[in-house]
Length: 428
Image 1 (tube, helix red, strand yellow):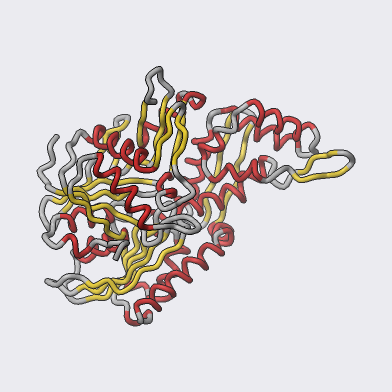
Image 2 (image 1 turned 30 degrees about the horizontal axis):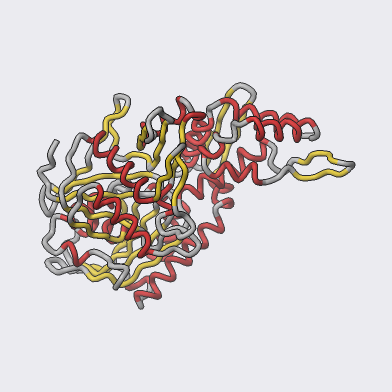
């Protein structure tokens, strides 16, 4: 299908990605994906490559990539959250069976497969979202832009504008404004949380006053549940006897819980052999045997879905029932919102510090903010919303289309003649 729109907006996120087009300069729509009799507004930012007899492995993206991995993990190279490496000099390329892929090639395959699943032809103009601060210890935004650009040229885009994700969300929100306003946007993704303060005057080009970001968001909150509810039931903090001493089970086995595909890839003879030896020498052998059973079950993705479900339930209830069971593993307990908020307390402090930073950079105080717009799945977490309500009051905090507002904002910016004025240039 050829798009009538001359521009596409792509919210390439750490966890999920969304594609949108503008029918005109006041309305935008998300491009749908059909998957297993469901229509999806967004897809997981995931890649999978299946071993093949050809030189190039077979690539897949989004939920199709997850299916490929779950069907045959031993013959599949699975990658998720690869956006995290965009600005890292430490990442040059990665091995995919007999071939190596650099970041640009990974992004090209990802977008190429989404294009095919959406049944569209890309237009020549692209407005792509980017975080305020890229992930990594020492991120290089020029490097990230160069890598993105290489992929976009290979896909046939002739005009590319990089727009900060919270700026796109602010632009989407500004469509409902009827009077001048200073707006603070909080954009909570899977890997980063970004904040922007924008000044909007109807009929005039908006003014960006300040930006700030921090490298934590929804994925971090999921891991807090895993670390406090799941891992202790599978042997974290357990010890084993060795030469008359009680030693802790190495923690590196449990850091793999940060990403479900890494945990799935522990299903290898050397790893299982080591865990069985620890279990045989441990008083907590039943927990370690459950850990082994989980790895061997092939049901790790289901565990992460259960965690995400419990987190979502806590956004509207004071407690949530967490339950996960496969042969050899049974974990069930009630999680209260209060204890969840205790687990994420340090993360909330970092978010609060980022809000303080963006206000300081804008040279304003909370009283100078007219409206607050929150977007992204983590914006539903009551403790996160409470950060903003304490500072700005309930009446100024709003949300809406939390998961697709950035893509729509990007598309709307792309429909304007002054799209370049909204873009950022790392070389400037």
